[in-house]
Length: 603
Image (cartoon, rainbow, N blue to C red; front, side, top):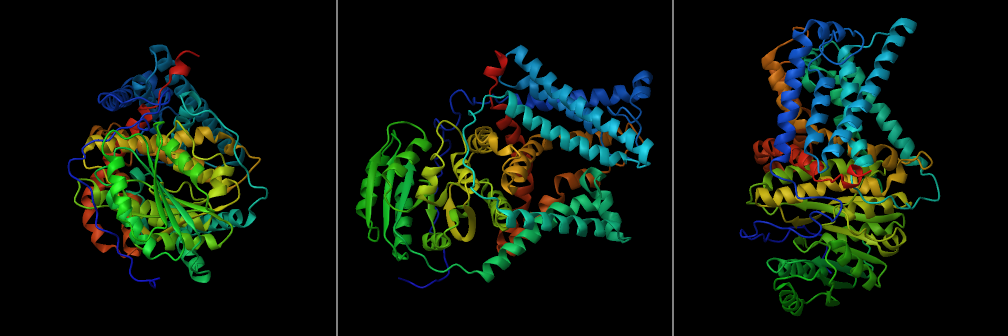
């Protein structure tokens, strides 16, 4: 067995002629649809025309201006300045979104009214509490704080109404831990408190940098304290995770492992995937068995698999299995049923793991409390989206997921390359069928059943990145829709009876963040239009503030994550990454529009 050496990923193999991909998982029956090209532009058009029209009416028509003196749907006066009429925008966005969902005309009207009336109710309660605070205890709520709270409320309502009205997987019984994991919870509270204290301390400083940051924070409104809070929280958690790994280094652990690879029409790349696994087996001290699950491919996948298996040298055994029921989850379930080892690894057919990936990922299972572990994806390079995707992974996995691990609240492990305790998968019900996000679902359930989840950035693998806009649309609609599928299926985790950081903080945050991305592009455009219109001299909006919404903290964090990982060349992709973030927002909106409302329409 070779000693640890620099782990160089294998050569990437991604043919140029793979222009599109579609399977039964792309739009699960009764849960999703293929989104018309016109759907997202319809939402953008209605939302922007509506918000601009309402802005003009609230400022130009005297009766409306007197009823809503803040130029927005506030029922009382606030003090201070604001940037954009966020409540007005959210109502317009709700109307635009409801107009384009997959529902009957009656269903669209009812969903839109449900969104608007719920939002107005929450805002009215907030305004009432503001009046009580001002008249009873003398505390005045600044207008920009009301703007931020209104925006967050609007985003959460948007997500929760999709969960309530959309066609989503049925709620199932969820596995729970038999004990309360107090240390991660207390640690999370401690780090959150420390981040909040430092952020407020910085915000209170009378420094030129703080004044400048106050001018260019999120559309000029939230101030440097809120602007700094989330990046600081993630940095502190990430540093804590690094410190923990130094205190408790993982030693070699090489038990027998079964590797399952589901494949559907992967003749173009499956041989390279098998070869990479064979090379990793050479560096692994334990026994490795490889199960190739052909999911009834229509190309030469089976012939290519048999030929590639004949060329392997280091695997204990390799076997081809035919699963005729279409769907990756069915192929994975067949692989789990065939697995006889204590540990199992799943690898996507388009993924080439690095030579040291298996031993690096398996060492974490020496700890009996670890139930699942994942690694870091690398882009093949050369494609339209590869450089932007790599920066996205650096931030979302290399920084964020590692940070979440310090508080034991990792939300999902990417299924391209993931290792599990076999019994842990079986005990939580296996891989879910007929939905998107089966990898996130099983990881969340394993974590909530009492095991720890781990992300190891040194366990690297190269995974396919779509090379066309059509393929990227299919992938991202499936990925972003999966957050709602997983949340709906595991809805019982939102109950207060089982308080964990993952179920009570991370799951709502993931829903809120997905809603934020769906709204980001129309909000960004509206911010520019509102700046050009300049209907209200009290607005503090500036071009710097609008650009800060587009750039802001995410840009700082992606640069920080890339520098920490010593992947300096990845920073050359920053221009593409900035454009990709806007495109990703558009695709997130499309993914929300892919959710159907058939049952709601006929309810």
